Length: 54
Image (cartoon, rainbow, N blue to C red; front, side):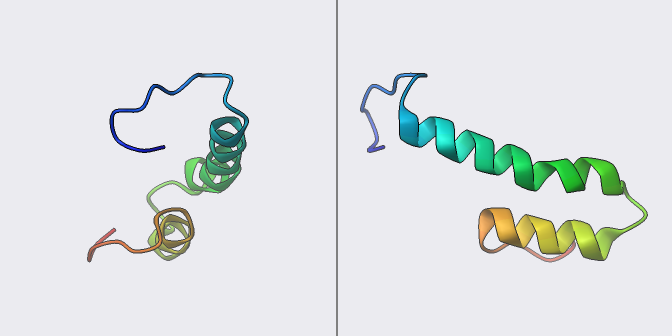
């Protein structure tokens, strides 16, 4: 999506990306604070890059 474009909630691309993000976040939600290494690895998978201490 380009900035300023209208996005519909039924857009197939957005639906696919939303689903992919949910699948990636499920393990983050299960790991909790005790496993920061795994949480960081999953965050890099989702966002591509992240700052220190993530």
